Length: 399
Image (tube, rainbow, N blue to C red):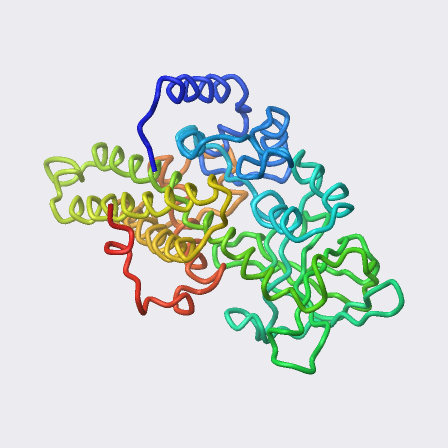
């Protein structure tokens, strides 16, 4: 795995930086820099800019619209996006459903769905978790009964991120209950405009509407929307989760946030000096940065495997555990750094208002982020379920 920057890589880095300087929408940057929640339109505009450039589906095979970039170029691109504080790419279409379709779908399905995902014309959400079926995903109850050339789907999905905006949902459904629970699961694509689909919001502890309940009541789904064979859903689900976990770690954004906290520590007064003079605080920050370096090399190994034509392996689970632990620890350290300035809870409307904020501007979204990040160790497979039995981040991710 060669990570040295060649002259061509440095030229590419400058190309990415120039593109971001010229094309990153100023209003979206203002919102991101000031902790103002984005609307769907903000995210779609940015993803459309990337897709028009051909820089959206960077991990896809070239024959389906991928970039053909080297591991180093992908590393550069993701780190430059984070350095410019661009919105996180919504993964459900391009990073999750897309790879499933080009790996397991037939030619008609590839032609039908992949261009719209690649061009960011369709918004997807994920229908996995159910009430009572989260980490034990194979116990899911949503039933799809085949009648002629259709499936009739009944059930409930929960914690469905951004379902309120979605055009389509990819679902795990039960098509057979006769054998062991993993064998009767299938992977189905469902149009969210179908009669019988109902979305209800779940307001999370940070006060935001990000996740939802999705109710499926006698929803008719064409049989042609089945990906792979009936009963193959569990294998497809494991494949998809590996792709999902690769992105959950959020390593490039963690690098930016650690640098930002280090800068803040140099500005925040403490006694007769600054927070950066507090040895105990800086020890915590330095340890996080060391652990982050370990996680980054795990991510690079995963990218190397994907660039060589493979798929994410166990490293993606390691990365998910390590990255989400780091995200939570960093959000806690932000709260510790800001003290009482982190305590006032700023709602979405407060963050978007023109009224003067309490404390420094960078404190406004610290508490919402801290509360929101309590979830990251749960989704994509809880860290308790993704076992630590053989793995600890510093040893497994050692460079």
